[in-house]
Image (tube, rainbow, N blue to C red; front, side):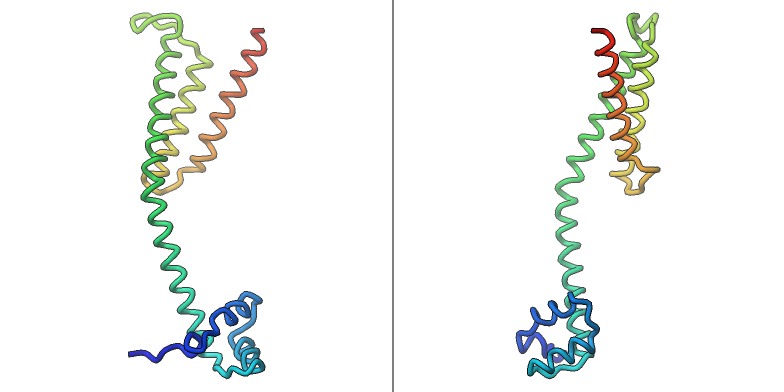
Length: 159
């Protein structure tokens, strides 16, 4: 069984963390603690900080995993809904004032809806597969902002 860490045994964890946060080396931390009346080697300081880092990393992974399990399904559902909404808008824009048999496309609306659908599909792919196809999230945001801006301009010009 490994020997208990001298820093933990003496309840000096907080002080070691404070000194490490100041950017001191293991040897400088050891020297500072010695001046305060606690003798510990720089090796023990390094071992303690390595253990701390490992423990914190494991805790961070656990929290991130829990949050991902909760948020990823919500995000993917929202992105799927965006894909469907934009594909529906593209279909309506393709029909325009016509019908399925004889469409009369609204080209500007069709282009907007198609770009938004593609951006949403890229963002959905990025979220579910994990790779980032050329800034999918930024593309989606920019596409939505562009559509809103162009619709606002059209509404203003019609008034």
